[in-house]
Length: 551
Image 1 (tube, rainbow, N blue to C red):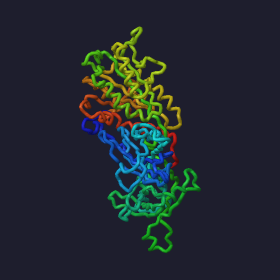
Image 2: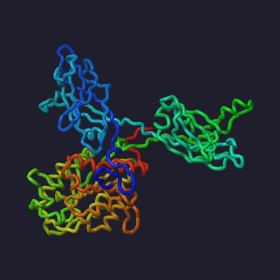
Image 3: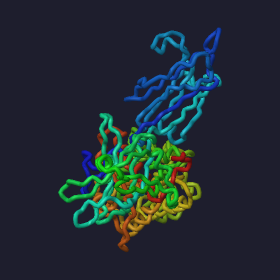
Image 4: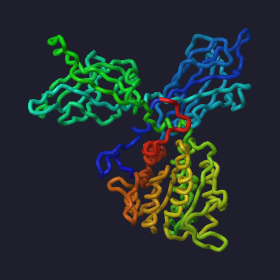
């Protein structure tokens, strides 16, 4: 999906834009081990303070209770934060020995601290690290353990229902029954949660199975009463009441799919008829054929479940970039040690690297002539080691990039398909796994028009079936219409054979829109939609997180 200045919806109609899909609540649990003993006659009384970084300054966010006389505390107070995938959220945990009742931290003895990003904790689910003193020396043998858990009930319930011998309400026909589900509202009134489709001309309807969030149906409370109303549909909106019954999710869970003897039957009661007729039994029966509760997995579920985001960068070394020794070149590294290529690598890499356990990233180049025979290559390791193209962290990518510039000749053409196919081969191997273990992200940084458009379209369409996303950052002031074409916002991308992309996996962003913006802004625009692309793929393939908990 393309970056849209001002944050508007793409031309294809309203679509989610921005970070709304990446935000959720994360709960952090903290414990300490082997803390320094600062008290003479007893042990330390530790508490933990969480700081968040804001514009380069550490701001106190919250603090735990004090664990009295304890060098191995497990704090019951949790830290709850908003999680934004597309941001680097820096955290600092500092432990103190409480000596006085003062809230001023300098009144208490310092026991050590630990700093990291929220992404590091989330990607590991649980981390244990040594505590450091202010001078970065170890705080004795002190350790801190931080565990992350998503704070959301993402369970969904799927119900399959039918009716039998419902009351006849139409004068010249039978009935057109439908069901409505209600839960108690905060005001004591019943609140409509779901309405089934109408089944025409029958007293024995079978409704389509439907799925609703458990939070919507019963606020996540399995014992909360649920009111089910059955009506006969009328075109004028004056639907005729057939009957009602009450149940709960815990009761409905007794139904077993595909086992008729374990189906649940609820008598549909019309209170008015019940009061008037002595021999009234019911107005029909509603049959619950199956009730299933599953998790509607979120991006954070997949990350906490152990899914690795594997990052590859592809760099355009075609002649249109200009001589890297010339200050007008897009590859010229200025006195500040950067250029638009490096800025794009840093913006994306600093986020992604937290979600890859070994932080070893392949860095590939295309469009250059390579020594010693000066043949053009569209898929070469910028560290000149084709059997091991991996760079250590984003720093390693930047160093390999700078080091290779004097040793290659910028040439052409601008072919994307070899690098896309390179990453796709690894993504295809990941599809053999029964759970969500790996998702591949290819960052292509380029200055101009694609030469192999037909091959690139075909490569993108094939990659759309794989656990893979492609981010294209356009540097310079060229016409990037071809990139917009690859980005399937306003139309479905098709290959030259007419095959449609399974999903939109390309995100294009022109760097020129961010030249004067804060460096974090580019990362937000480029990565804001990656979480829903990850979720979309794994949900479509019905792949659960590797370490998922039962619903």
